[in-house]
Image (cartoon, rainbow, N blue to C red; front, side):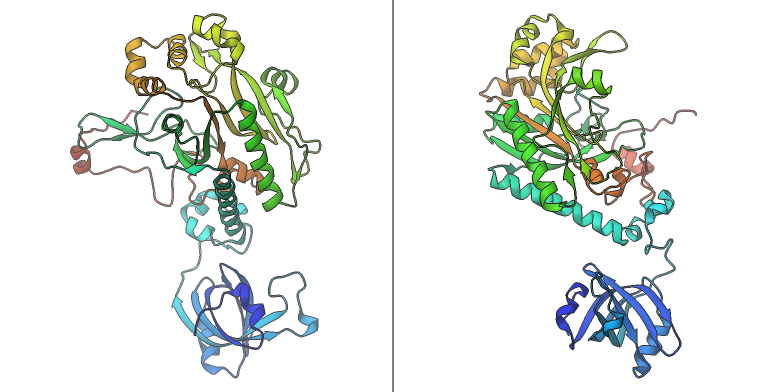
Length: 466
């Protein structure tokens, strides 16, 4: 008999069906055994009656989270037993046959409750069990739907998705890189991408014009509660655009996501309000202000754009560094200052961030497609000509070969989903998350590797004394 999904049972009233899934709840009442059965599509209550002798004997042995194939008759519930507003609340499965597909030991915790109340270390150690819970299943499916909508909308708007390399080169442009030893090139290393920033701009040189990617990004940062060593971005770039073009496209896409997938939520203001960096800091003491009129309303979404960021800021040593991205282009009226390396602290960049309820969920800029202007940025930051050529020579060469004006943005998809799903942190919307300290207790990583592997990779390990 073909399998029927639990979510489709209501259309099979009076029929004999076969369902396959997990035992969510089992209640032995002597002559009868009740079971709540679950698959990816929903939940159904089943009952084994005394006249089905083989089934009743099998049901008495079954425990929660066993995987079973159930044969049964879909019966309409009596009027007084109908559970209004509940999926399959008007039907019940009369179980006539049970096949155990796999047994389960006692689960490490109850997934029938809100698992947020369970110790997170235990949840992450047994993430494959945690993901069975109703809330985590909803988060997984919401993540899929948001990403699918993004892909569909951008495809319809003429974008193409291009995958960029995971093994790349370490360059001094942001956070600390994760590095990978290159076995075939002793003493040399690949770096894992902090973002596809350089590749996305090189795709503009390549004539792609409209690029996007659901991109994995890796940053070796100090441990912080709501950071992950690897995370997901919506990364996009467009040629022949100004700041207004990028902002308009992204605002439209965010509104579409909310209105299509989260109709219960209200966007406080459309178009999204805009603040300059100076205004945001003076008024809210934050470059990602929470503009909600009622901060107790979890379904209220207050988006805003923050623009006109300073290009440079001083480091602790008194040197200049970029505030967001070295590849940004100054505002047109400040290009001359950059080229002359004057009024450095006053140069404003075409950087734009989008914030939501006090969180930055995206940031981008119009890029510096002029190789001489980009070189000035690195000179202001104190890079020698040799270092500029070594680290960024490929970018400068590309920009000298007909690169069009371009700009883009990257969203923190995990953070956006956290807010849309009303979750307290991004680990709740990342399928296989790590702890706030960057560990994976399920796979027990990071972990040591064998001496043989280290010899093959031409590396040694030096442990610091604590």
